[in-house]
Length: 452
Image (cartoon, rainbow, N blue to C red):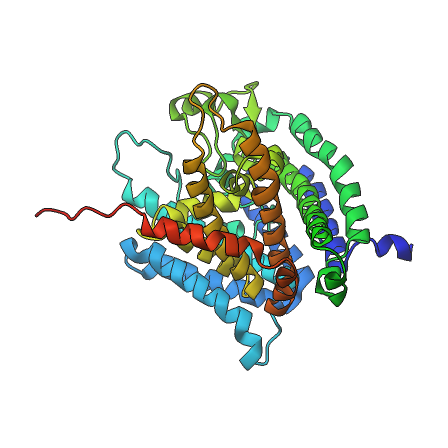
């Protein structure tokens, strides 16, 4: 029994228990009518059971954000909530250094992260709906009903995704209450995800057991060849990916059972955005026996994660709900250095460890590197592809080895540990990116001056 328990960490076992309990609960909650308040109460009870009084951390920002939403000038609400929520997130992470409080870590930190996304997300949803309330023919879908105070708190603590993600909007939660979904059978969607577990769980358990992360912190890493270090980084990345593949297979299944992210296939739903063909959606939303899919909640595109040609496509395929959150509420709303600003926000959201900032900082440069290289090797207009020799070379050198290196920075976290391993592989990726980044900045097209 001890050997079985030792195959995973304590946190992994806790998350497994939470996911399985949430899965069982979703099967019951699905049968209720309007289940938003009940699901919020269940999520709050689960959080209270797991983290105890540390739930005060998340309750604090929920109360502050709701206060800003109620009393701040309407046009400034998103900005105030965004800045306040991230400032609060940084404060609680450092509070234990100068106040007699418990550190925000592990499950407490995860809950704080998810609630941060939900608070900012619903703020933008409300504000966008308010700004476009008089649009006669809107080109996109806005919030169809403003939430009550209790519904906001229920959304913040909704048990679905509270401990693992994925992120979903409040509008998606409202859509899940559609009575027509009760006649829809989620079994095929859930089954396809559980099939993934047949290979992802064994792969995680085996690689996690034989290739522990601490090996990268050891001085023994200097005793093996450069090639061996790269192979070990690749295997550590396998541990990380299969862990996430497994967790999100169950987490997505919970969403599917509850109807979150389930829309008529003909409405062309997109991740987080929901249906994009609004006319088709309006005609089919209340009908039964309509072909549905879960595209709006699919958090991973595993084939693209594993086999896409470049950094950008690989990044977009990973944690797609958070990627879309960043695109909707950061990248599309800042006016300069969009990629760099988005990566900075992503790093701050993930945590205060130097490894996060080192990895996300290099990601921004990787995107520039890729843009420059792809311009030098253009797509064949007939095939729509770059030369096969280039795709093989680029994918299996810079792209794959680059993602593996970035993953080690994300996992090792501490600056000293990241430096220990990255120096053993000679910081090859940042050093490769820097000249391309400088070249891109120097050759950027000059902005035309406005003529008054």
